[in-house]
Length: 317
Image (cartoon, rainbow, N blue to C red; front, side, top):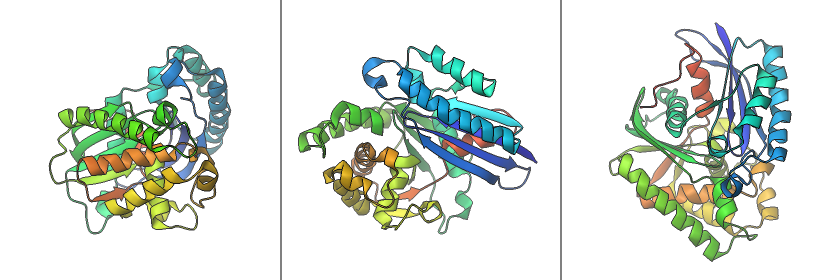
């Protein structure tokens, strides 16, 4: 058995998974944590990581490092994604991470991010009843980017990462509280332009199972399911019809931030950006006429952990 630690540092959140890996057995989760640090705040506009954002990330990562040491993880892998890829001043971030972990974060490409997300999302599909039909279109809606990966279990056929994410679109378009119809229309137009580029690389005009990942998707699912509190076990592998995605998205976009904050399943760090995240999901399903969504609580973090079994990342395809 090998105990490993995986860290995913995105535009909106930083997350930790400590798990035990053993040949021939399913991973045994020890600890899973998330902190909203908004590392990518303002990156779309300035091209740089703000000092305050790096400091928020440092505080969270210091806590993660202490737990990694206390729980005795033998291997650690930290990846950084959209915000860090886009930042001109990555050196300050790299120095901070190396100081805390003794190793730098890997700033991975969009293709690598997509492959890790696919690996995490599909690792336990054999437990779903009835089984989802392949191929799978895995969509990971993050803060700065969204990854699209088409494939079957264990094989990625095509992947693309595009710069639409809940933080990025909120900063670009959704300034009002609640957002105005014109702001929502501008954000939707932005999404549709990105989807046209996706369709050129990823074959979406075929029967497939849409698997949605990350906080925007799981929060939409929690609201659509009417849960009294956020319950990962109830959300994982839930099936959400497109009609419920539409109505939930419309409701979130017409609520004020105060109203969204009052929802029992809403994380405080998602209150201001969930409307954009939900809109991305709704436009994807409408644009490609997808009638339902399979939701996964397993994502890039689980893919990072799995890659530590042999310390080699999955092939991005």
